[in-house]
Image 1: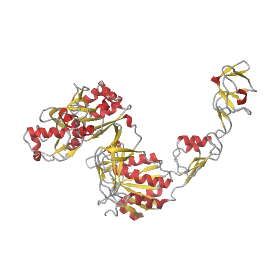
Image 2: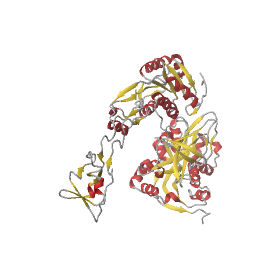
Image 3: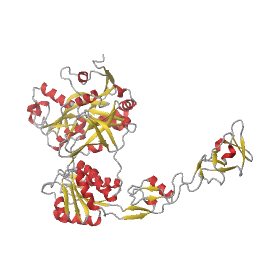
Image 4: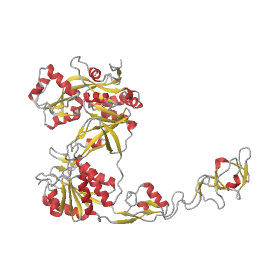
Length: 630
């Protein structure tokens, strides 16, 4: 089986949504039970609010004309009952009275009050219908009912409200390799996290998800499960099995029970999506990779759900940002690229993250999506683009860190919360220095060894940043070495042993890559002699994971990463891992918070638990003056 088409997203949605216009029923419920439901018709007020003339203040109801001329030099006295009547906030104003004077503005006498200021007609009085007028529109059809909507309906006399029935959405996880999260997964088994992702999103939107047990790759079993789900639910989602592999039965099952409208949507990630129909219900095949599933849920399933429920879609939160590095795309797909967002030197910047369809962390730690339309090759670094945010961000309280990866950054992020949030993008030490130079980050983790001087970081900073003052904060001396499989079965002891095995390497510009190159040179070894030298990964944990999996036998990295992955470690070198700080950030409140975290006892205790760190200089700061500024 192959993809039937590579159809544009908008074309798929426009025609597919028209197939299901009369699927949802109407419920008539009381307002107090309507939170989160969707209005099936306009809701109108049956009475005004307030429904009588009332006082807006505690004080005295008076007749405005009887207060004319009152001042400090000539106070006016008003007698109780006939000229002044006490009222609390919300009390009805007696007939014939047309103003209220606050209680703190009167001098109470034995038989009346004394005032030193005139009142005007309507002062501190709420007329009938000041808030809501009877028969006015309260809520439009398609609005999702929120807490204040409930209060408005109750206050204005609504007894019943028409809402669309809750949609039941079946989620059917499929695949021989899929297991429950309650199991301890073995090699080759994948935990079913997608069902929980889909169910959580559906609940967030107001739907009622029904998660079915995992169905193995069996055509008959899958067909019977889909038939059962379609009989009980309004929509069916088949998770995985939407590609063109030999055991991918979703398309075949949908075709057998009904019709496949589209197989292959021109989006990335998410291309293998199937849009079908059976038993007059939407039957949709969602790709198995988590990020693909998330994008399909947000860009396709949500649109279909809103159409079924006749929900008025709320516009996404967007902002303009300047790209810190290129976002290249192909011409065939509408691509959704995850990004991190921050504000540096008054400009909003966005850094693209890894694009793998399986990289859930790019959603968890990302801030939003950059959409690259089809027939576009993408965007250049420095180009202003529109970002669709996952949530509202306080950019003034966001610290943007772009540079080398270290596990300590996660501890710093924890420490600055909730006063600030730390956004980290791992592009290597040299990439971090360039981000500082270009005004794209507040700080950068760096650990670059200069082969000529044998010094860390400062030679590179002076070489690349010549026109501004920056600061270098010492975070830690950390142990770099060779991460090897548990028990070190190949007896790897030194750099020269890497010529006998396969390794995972860090990306160009990473401090660990520079260190490896330096050590190879010192030992007279050419990179061409190292199998896997060009296998590049962006973090120490990525390399450690490759070693643990057995895909490679070793990789350079820090001790803390090997400890986290429960593999062995051969120490080779102690290096300086520092934070390069812009002058603007150094003078900010955010830096004060960050520095107080780094120098705290609790932070140092947590770092020491990671292992492989020496914190004797932690928190020390030096300034580096750009050569052109001197």
